[in-house]
Image (cartoon, rainbow, N blue to C red; front, top):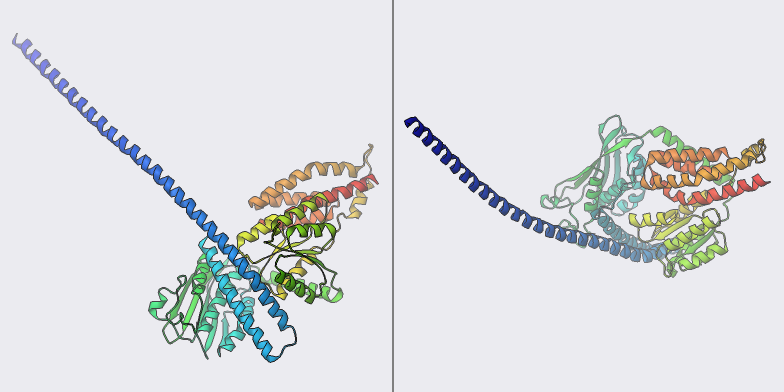
Amino acid sequence: MSNENGEIQRLRRTIEQLSDQMIRSKEQEERILAEFSDMNNELVTLQRLLAKNNNSLEAARQQAVDAGESKSAFIAGISHDFRTPLNGILGMAEMLRLSPLSEEQEDSVSVIQDAAKLLLKLIQDLLDLSKLEAGQMRLEMGEVDLQETINYIVRLLEPQVRKNGNQLSVDCDPSISNLLEGDSTRITQILINLIQNANKFTSEGTVRIRVTLMKDDEITQMIRFEVEDTGIGISEEDQNQLFQPYMQTERGRSSEYGGTGLGLSICRSLVTLMEGQIGVDSQEGEGSTFWFELTLGKKDGNQSANQSVASAQEHQGQDMDNEAPSVSVLLADDNVINRQLVMLQLKKLGITQVDAVVNGEEAIAAFLSKKYSLILMDYMMPLMNGLEATRKIRSIEMDEMRHTTPIIAMTGNVMQGEKDKCMEAGMNDFIGKPFTLEILSKMIEKWQQSSEPTEVLNMGIVHEIAELNTDGERTLLGMLLDMYRTETPGKIEVLRRHIVSGDHVAATEVAHDLKSGSLSLGIRYLSTLFAQIEQFAKEGQSRKAEPLLDALLPAYQAACASLQRVSKD
């Protein structure tokens, strides 16, 4: 009996323990559920706060974007408004210099030119700073001939240096490759800025340019550029903040030297954009050495140099053997001073067939009434601006199967975004105000050569195909033309998409296919367009092919119409 009582007691204790454990587990579960509920409530609250913060951040981001766009638009407008009258001032001053003047008059014109150029540089510095801050500055990679670049800079700046009583010397390392790869324009800009800065703070002394090879491997060279002067030097305190925007040394802020304090900041930003380094070594009263280091790619210098020489010789031969072709120009600009200036410049270049209009609507009317060798189109005009007028002209050319007339944009807004808009509208090139007589001459020469009439068909090949009759009623030429018509428009559209999207490999393949198909039918002009696009795509420069896209469809339609006439005959 005692054993049974003992067993019952053990069972009771076990049950009590289990009950106690179940109660504690229940309490723990409720406690966990309560904590989970509290955490969930906190999470919901955090999510609401996060959503609210996200909305605030998005609003702030959009506000910043809008502010940036407004700032860019404002600076673009200001740039155009400043550059337009500056174009008139500098252009008229240049024309005056070409006239018989007394010594006093020549001095007066020089003062006008110097003042206008100083103002132009200040505007350019502000534009560069704006583009750099907005992340819109893009490098234009190409060939860099350092020796040629240095020679150009010396020719440009030596008169300024001598005027200050200084001597300009150059020490260039001969082991640097003849041709490198980089952005020659930006390297030139940095060097000019540093040399002008050195000259400004040096009197009756020396400004030395030193270019040294730091590292050399199979595909790159690291180059160190130094601009050393014997001028007033810079204190250690000023050196620490020298490359900040609007910052100048204590002496640099004086009216004796002038400037905005933007030049060195822009140099630093450009060097950083090219993944280089920049710095200064100086002691007050003992001169300064500004330096920057860049890694540039190597190129096959001899071949490129030989090609350049051959091209130049060929061009010289053409100039000697042929008279200049007759050039007719349509000038569209609403500013009366600019119209007068450009007409004077054109007259100086021997171009007298010039029609001037004041807005886009008049430009279209003139284009419809007469054939022009070239159109100079202002960007901003009343009633219809230059972009709208260009789009309309390109549409007319396509509808009427005309050869495209080169259209050159003229504007005081030189920001990259505005250049892109000009190209997208169908313009062929871009000339920023103010521009010199030499710049205008080179632009006209470039596009006059490219706009000379081109033979639509190679009639020798076409006649050979036409003579190969088939056994049926239709000619072989007619059958091939039908096949060409069926396939080509779709391929052109595919090529357009690849070019715009920057798919260089695909664009190269499609352009090559279209070129080959066109050549086999004797279609000459259109095949040259495809060949140019193929070459740009091969070089990874599809963007340069974009202006050619608008010429494809008119050229295709003209070729098909000519082939159709031959087939019927």
